[in-house]
Every structure is written in structure tokens, then in C-alpha cells.
Image 1 (spheres, rainbow, N blue to C red):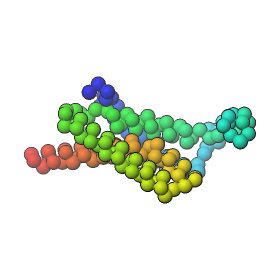
Image 2 (spheres, one colour; image 1 turned 180 degrees about the vertical axis):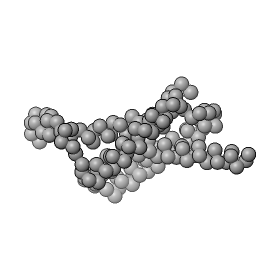
Image 3 (cartoon, one colour; image 1 turned 180 degrees about the horizontal axis):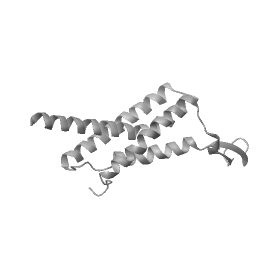
Length: 150
């Protein structure tokens, strides 16, 4: 499986993913925005094009960190990477896509305006999160089952 990152990258990814997700939740709940991350930029696609406005980069930084570290965690090899682990990985990915799009379909039906936009902000990350949780849950069940058999 040449498309997977080395196993050692998983720990590095987790060290970035966990604090990024926690800080992201805190930022959303508290509306925390440190001033040193404020920048003035031109908003081209706004009501007044090419006007300067202030934007805080914390959301963008955290979003990029969550995506990059999530991809590294999700697609790093296990210590033992065999055909059965590959099957679990594929099944977990398919399950995650189904659940993610079922939630998106539901959101399209019941959420409107800014509620839907808020949901879509989270939906950028849910596919990765669902996959990571499902895959690692299946792997832990597999390890527990093989340990119980011994």
C-alpha cells in the first residue's frame, strides 16, 4: 500500500489533530480571536468589491491544521498492515461516506440560511472524523478479539 503514510506519522498527526479540534471547538463556542492574527484584506466577492476589511486568520489556521493532521492520521499505516486491515480501512471509509452524506441530505431538508452554512462548515471535517473514529474503533475491536482468543 504505497498510498499510505508511514506508521510513525500517525503520532505526529494526532499531536496536531487533537489540540486543533479542541481549540477549534473553543474558538467557535467563545468567539476567541487573538488580535495578532487580524489582517486587512481585499474582499473581491463582497457587496463593496475591493474594499479593505479585517479578517482573523485563526479559523483558517485551525481548519488547515485539522484537515492536514486528519488526513495524516486517517491514512497512516498501522504497525501491521495486511489485507484484513486494508478491508477494514475500505469498509470504514465507505461507511463514513454514507453517514456523512446522509447527514448532509438531512441538513439540506431541515436546515436553512445560516444554520445550513454553519452545518456545512462542520461538514468539511466530519468525513475525516467519522472515518478516523470508525476505523480505530474497528481496529481496537479486532485487537481485543485477538487478545481474548489468546
